[in-house]
Length: 591
Image 1: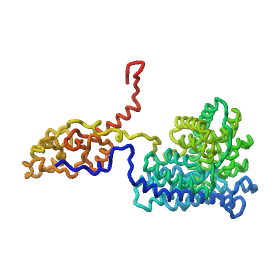
Image 2: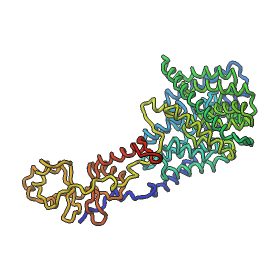
Image 3: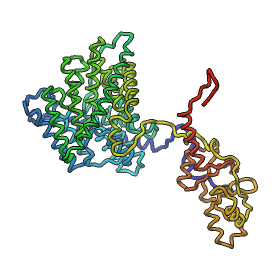
Image 4: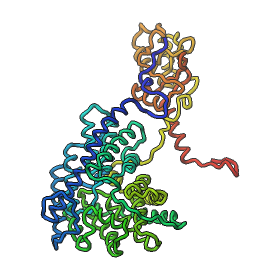
């Protein structure tokens, strides 16, 4: 009897996607996670408003408040320092994972921490961010809500028996839901999940993320408000050069993103040289924030009012210059000090300011060019071109401007990847000794099938061979560690290895027994010619058999053998396709 089909093969079938019914389970769980993300966004907004009212107006209220309306005199320097001292203490005695802007920590948890975030982080991250932003920290709420929403998804997932990959799906679903709850940009949130957080594009993760995002979007009108966050009616430029101009602005803000990222980590290095515990660093950075606030109070806080004014084109040039220069300084110093806050809102202000100023030279509506700058800098800094292009359109409701935001985002992305090895998000992770590759490719092992790599008509041992002769064969002639054992019709009976020969030679009673009576097929992994090489690699790992026989379906005749060395050929071929260059037209093909 031929060996029974292996369970490893039964778990796989040739299809365009690897998916099973657990996708539906995760989608159902994403309904809860999406609701949690929306509630987390609402809670963070209210906490920021509460902190802003307490620090700047001395009142207990969760109503919207703008720092520029406050008249506090010299306390404009003291208040950010107080807030940063509180954040430093929370990080020191609570959890140091609340430091920074949240997205790198989320990525690191996904890739290296089995997508397990703690309840402590879920509580402390929004609270510390609210204190930081409310006391004047020049940050946005998006990084903290991504970390908070991710923690909600992770904690919910940890309550059930799920794999690390499934926990990752719900963590990212919570993060995307939180972003949707804050900004009302569901498509951009889904794209951010795909471009930055998931590190895969599979139905198993895509569908639950979509469900969570749309659940959060459904809750948003009741919790935060409906419509685009910065709804505007900017006129599109009528010039034939408008698309080219958008590309030029993308190049400029892409370079700006590169400079900002470089300066951020230079400043962080300087803080690491201070002879003080890192708990005190945010307070030192807050002094610079306060001084910047004395120059222009618009640089304090999340700055959403400044974003709205940039899009409206209503700011004076000197205010825009202050936003571009002073906001950059206070944001870089504060973030480099390790306090808690997001990067997206400051990037939108800095990119929007650059676009606004360039727009003064180009003519047309300066607010439109500010929006183009926002799309470009988000793409260049976060290495998320599709997210940047769609986010700007969803944020303003100007979907007619998509061709312009796409070319700006693409140009900024091109500049960023050429000039910087890592993004503003991944550089922090790299400094902790981790390497991340933000490219999606099809695994060569999953693309090739066994018959394309196997050694055909391999040497086999007949089942009629005695154990004694087989042991002698391994002692003198064998070139491989194992060989298929076949019957008279070439059907697989099992495998014999050097280990078998070593064990059998110490038992004289087996010398005259045949291999057909001795070998066992109970745990022998097999594959078929159309089995993907990725599944064969899984079989080798699961069974620790370095050579897997490839058999014909039905007859179970041995057609070939696939070894670990053969599998490495797939990577070699893939690398050649990347590096070897040929010309086929206009000359003789030559590698």
